[in-house]
Length: 246
Image (cartoon, rainbow, N blue to C red; front, side, top):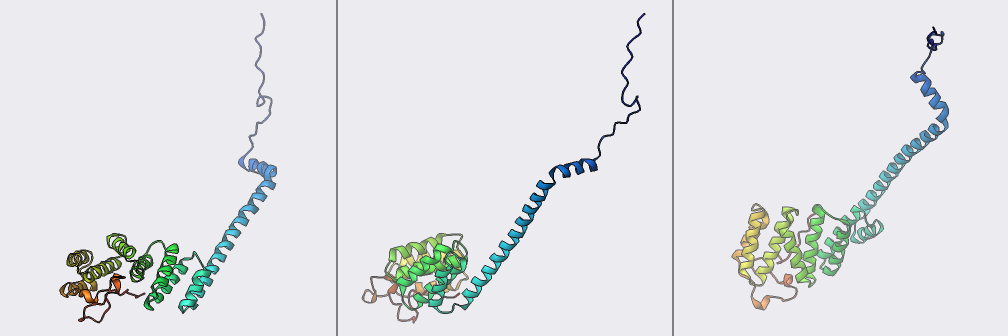
């Protein structure tokens, strides 16, 4: 009878021990195989961190320099020079608004229009942007661009994103224009609109006074621009006056 084949002896049966490498040994082998690449990667990461920090530091320093330059600009000429030098920066937009305000106050309405338009190239939203929009519309009216100015005022009145202060002032200016042209219905329309937006506003009191006064006579009305029409004799305030408060 044949003897059954004996099973082959396993390493363990022969006295050998099968040792699986531990995690430490695996990590050591991985490090030995890839140490150059890992070191290079570490250097790259370190340089990126240092570079980012340096870039942020330089940016912060630049912002401080721009802020100091803006603070030193006092006159319209200096503000305009600053705005041109820092074109695109938000403070340049603010400077353009100040330049425009100064031109408007001096009766240089065409210059005011140009400066307000420059401000709008930089400013996109917020109270100063609303302020620039109001100034632009008023300067357009005073410079003879009555249709464009009135359109701008109407947009401000109807824009819910615009501050209430600007909305009611724009509505008052439209009521003033309607009053100057003898349009009582237009005065009422914008007076009612002011009451809807902010009845506690000083402009609400002023528009009520406006409704109670007679419209200027044809003899004293200037056709172009409509905003140049003088106010009734009872008032010493111009019909159209831009609120230049900062």
